[in-house]
Length: 293
Image (cartoon, rainbow, N blue to C red; front, side, top):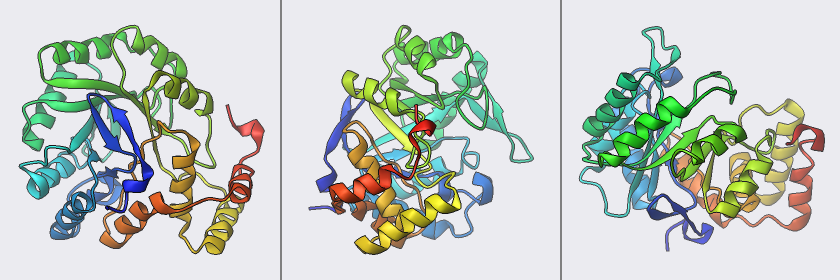
C-alpha cells in the first residue's frame, strides 16, 4: 500500500485519481521563474512522487516558463499509464517575471501546443483555463471567447478535459453552459474559505475541486492555532492543513508542492492523519464564520 492509498479516489475528467497528487510549481526557480537551483534534485522529487503512488501531477508551461514541463518529461517520460498530468493556459510570464493575461485565441492555441511539445504528449489529459482578470484572486470577467477556443481544441483531439482556475461561482456556471468542466482550481484553506458553497455545488455534480496554497494567507494567530493543533497530534502544520482539506469534501483533490523528498513524503503521509471531531471543531474555529462564503 502506498502512503496515499487511504485518502480515497475521485474522478478527474476521464480518469479516477488518488486524492493527493503533486503540484510542480515549486520545482522552478525563485518566484516560479527560471531553472531550479538543483535540477537533479527536482527530477528526483518527481520520480519519488510517482514511486509513492502519485497519479495526478499539476503543472503549467508558464512555470519557469517551460521549466516544470521539461523537468516532468525528463523525469517521467514515457509516462505511467495511470498518470494524469493537468496543465494550465491563459497566462504568460514577462521578462521581469511578471504574470500577464494570455487570453487571445492565438496565445491559447500556442500555449496548448507548447504544453504538448514540452511534456512530450499527443493529447493533454486536462487543461485548466487560468483566469487573469485579477492576478491576486478570482474576479468577474467574460470567459466565453477563451473557453470556446479550448473547446475547439478539445474537438480536435488535443485536449481530453477542460477545467477552470482562479474562477468565481458565476464563471463556473457560465463555463458549464459552454462545455463540460471537470475541475475547478482555486485558493482554499483553513484561513480562506470563500469557496465553501462552490465546493458543495461541485461535489453534488461530481466535479473535482483542487485547492491551492493550503497554508497561504494565514494570520499569525491562525498559524499559531494550527501549529498548536499539529504539535498535539505529532504532525506538521502542513499535514494538518492537508488532512483538514481531505475531510472538507470528497471531491477535494490536493496538489501540495515541494522541492524536497522529505517534505513530499510528509505531505503524502497526511492521508493517514486522523482528525478527531474535537480537533476538527478547533480547526473550523480558526476562521470566523463571517469570513466564509
